Length: 246
Image (cartoon, rainbow, N blue to C red; front, top):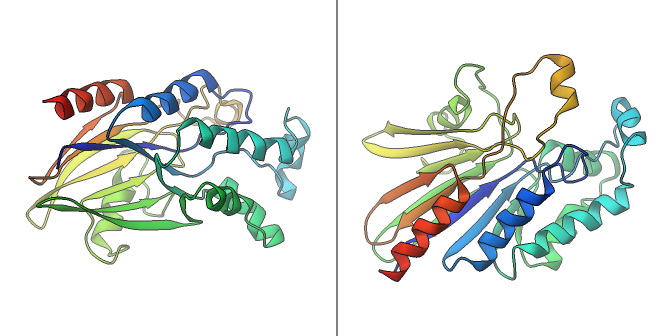
């Protein structure tokens, strides 16, 4: 019956030397300690350089694949019990299943009772008096170098979900953005999350533009159809706390 919030994060790359672990730890703690705030994670929790063309990168990694999984499991534990709404795999996570048929990320999620899918979720949030359709993937096609959220809007237009979602969230490109837009008379929200990999040597080498970290918080109102996005997760958590105390 009160406003609630979801924090969206992807592309943590926890085992990468360029990962900002301190910020991720703070983010998870904020979710854990904020009443009414939950998290959704959608892919690339680790580098997982196990495919042939990336084996040289794995040899230079500080983490053995087993240690990467331990790090991921510890990261999930920081959010607290029943605070992660879902977990979606990314391309780095899915390399393991494509090579071996085994999805260890799924096993971690099941052990912590987290909803898991390797590709996509369409979730309907049912509230008192209103509901919200949420489409979440790690990546999809129809990308644009000029408009990061273009892929989210095209996924809506092309019927990727069972029904037109109110909110579409994707990651993968490390180019965070938030866009409000109208579709069939309803205000909708498209989000591309950023990455905690602050120092990306691969991006420097191939000439990709600098991305950035953004794990936004979206606040939902149950008694009216209203969504408000905060690029800064701490600002979102603070405003949610204010609303729930009112």
